[in-house]
Image (cartoon, rainbow, N blue to C red; front, side, top):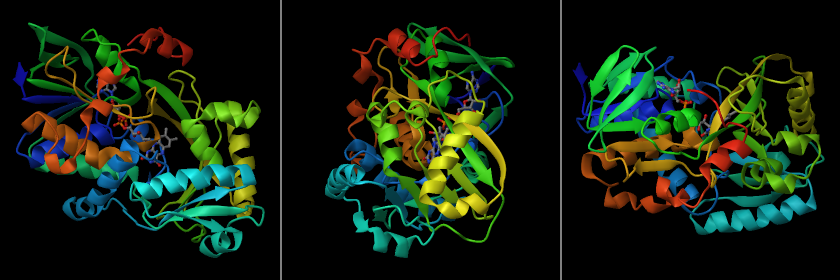
Length: 407
Ligand SMILES: Cc1cc2nc3c(=O)[nH]c(=O)nc-3n(C[C@H](O)[C@H](O)[C@H](O)COP(=O)(O)OP(=O)(O)OC[C@H]3O[C@@H](n4cnc5c(N)ncnc54)[C@H](O)[C@@H]3O)c2cc1C
C-alpha cells in the first residue's frame, strides 16, 4: 500500500495548482487523474484571466489576488503559459445594457478594479474590429490571458519537479474513513493512505462527495466554443458582451428566445497562434459534452453582430466543456468539518483558469497551517460547503438535469 500526506483527486488546472503550491511548501502530494492532465474543463475552455467578469465582492477580490500571482508563475514555471496583459472589453449593444453595466462597473471600481465605460468612438478606437452598431463598451487594462493547457501542464511539471507524484489514467473509486476521518483513497490500481484528500474534480465533484456521504451542490454547465483558422492579429485583448455577464449571473433576465434558452453570451479571444476562440453558451444538459448545430449557429449570429469581420474567417472545429457550477457561482474551498481531512476545491464555474493561482495558494495554506495566511485576508466562510446547508441538494441536481448519474 502507498502512503502520501495528501492525495488530490483531479489533474485539471485546480488539482495541478494545489499540487504545485503544496510542493513549494515542501509537501509533495499524490495526484490521481483518471484521464490525463487538462483533459477535463481545463482543456476545453477559453483563455481569459479576467477580472471584469467577476461579481464585486469576494469573487472579484479573489480574482484580483489570483491575477497578481500570474507574472510570478510565468517566471517560475519552465513552461511558457502565454500570460499576456492586453486588457479586456465588454461590448454594449443597447441603452438597457448600458444602464446595467454602469452599475456593475461602479461597484467593481469600489473593490479596486481599474475599469471604465467608453463611448462608441472610444470603444472602436480601442478595438477597431467592433461593429458600428455597438453603443459603447467597458474597458479594463487589468484583464489578462493565459493558455489554459500550458498553464495546467506548467503547474504539473513544476509540481513534479518539486517532488509531487502523479498517477495518470488512474481512477479514484472510493474513500475509506477511520472514526469519521479520511484514511485512504482507493483507486483502480491500489489504495493510498493519506491524512488529507482534496476533491479537485470540477464538474464531477458530487461523485467524490458521495464517497464520504456528502451532498455537494455542483452541477455541470456546458459551454460550446468555435475555433477559427489562424489569422493575422484581429482582436486586442479579451472581448465579452453585456449579455455574457447576464448569462453568467442572472440568466433569468435574458428572456425566453432561442439565444436566452442557450445562455448565449459573447466570449472572444485570439490565441498566440492566431486562432480565434468564439463562445459561447451556458446550458444545463447533464454531463453531455457534445456540440449542437443550433447553439453554434446562435453563437455565430451573435458574435458577427459585434465583430463583423468574423464572417470572412473559416471555422476549423468546435468543442464544449463543463463548467462546475454552484448555486452562488463561487467555488467551494476548504476542509469539510463533518469529514476531517476531506478538502473541497471545486466549483469554479467559468473562472477556474483565472482563480487557479489563488486556489492553489489557499488550499496549500489550509493543509499546511489550517487556514489561509493572514495577508491573503480571505473570509473562508463565504467559500465553505456549509454556506449551502439550507440548499436542497437533491432538488438542485434534479433541476439542473444531472440527477441519477452513476459514478
Ligand atoms: C466553454 C468554457 C469556457 C471557459 N472559459 C474560461 C476562461 O476563459 N477563463 C477561466 O478562468 N475559466 C474558464 N472556464 C472555466 C474553467 O475551464 C474551469 O473552471 C476549470 O477548468 C475547472 O478546473 P478543475 O481543475 O476544477 O476541473 P477539470 O479541469 O475538469 O479537472 C477535473 C479532473 O478531475 C478528473 N476526475 C474526475 N473524477 C475523477 C475520479 N473519480 N478519479 C480521478 N480523476 C477524476 C477529471 O478527469 C478531470 O481531469 C471555462 C469553461 C468552459 C466550459
